[in-house]
Length: 219
Image (cartoon, rainbow, N blue to C red; front, top):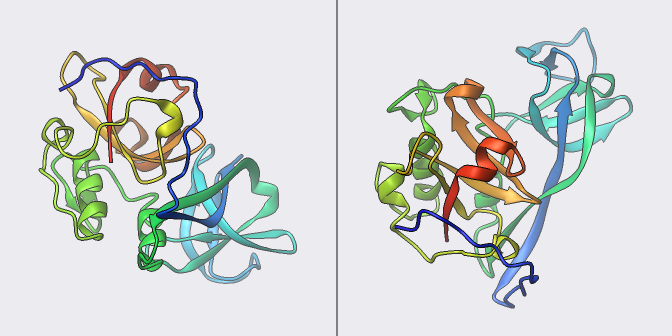
């Protein structure tokens, strides 16, 4: 199991067997805000309060409102004044002929699901490896339960430029052994279930913790 990495600066070439599909735009909340059922402050509330500096996926805009993808696949609404747009369009690269409904399941539907050590169910909570295992099982791929065992499965990725959305990332945060995992979603961002975040959230590989501790990637 590799415990170090050496990312090359060369650009990767997309195989013709894959197609890329845009899902939405990544946005970040600038202040605590509810998620509403409709683009109006007097409509029903789907989620009472999203914390500041939380990432959401915007799939459409309507006036001063942003439509965001909810855990159950529904569309919620947050005021444009409560968020800032990132320059990153969320995309997924899939094998040609793959069912495109897998894209949304692999994207942001589980943002906000709470962290639970040993958790395997989004209704009660997920830990990092439980989250990754669940996502891959939705694509018909079974993975071991523990992150360190998952990291032994699949094709190794050794260059940063070769990473594709959906690739699995493995980190040794606390020591020499792999103890954390997440899914790469592109442009340096990855989605994971983290105790420090309280649940499923998005971080960037430039963060010092993850930059120093990324030791393996698998496809």
